[in-house]
Image (cartoon, rainbow over all chains, first blue to last red; front, side, top):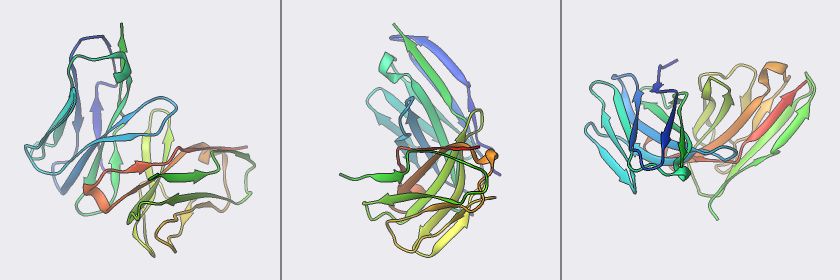
Length: 112
Length: 113
């Protein structure tokens, strides 16, 4: 089983703070790296799919970077809002097996 | 509306009684998969399918079966459920493999007594 690790496990910030999380994944057999946002009592929703080393993606206040050579990706949230409160998941898609392996997520809580 | 539909949403049953959780997508997606979510362990892939009649094991396939006879449907079968299969299950689909995002169903909460 591939090892995909996310840190921190949880994070509590105040409205307006900027924050970032890390996803570490195997640096070999890379095919794609996914980020999802998962709100309580809902289903995970895709944020980004990243495929190339050096990729940077942005959606509103959320952005992500990718380093496939060293096996990590960062997710950034600028000016956190209470509606950003959710668990953020990353997932690694291997080039040798068509499996998607998820990390255990970073739980973000944003308070006023 | 583009969606992944799972049924049932909730089920309480007993050990050993065969059950099937259905999953259907209306987006003509090739890739479909099943995940289970357990506290502290995150989402773990049970089985996946690259296309019709092509299925393969994920990381936790023991005790589960799947089939992909039609592109839109990907049922998850528990032939002899046991209490350790009590979990929240998600079906997901994507257009093609790993370079497109997964679209998740609403989840099925199974309790095996």
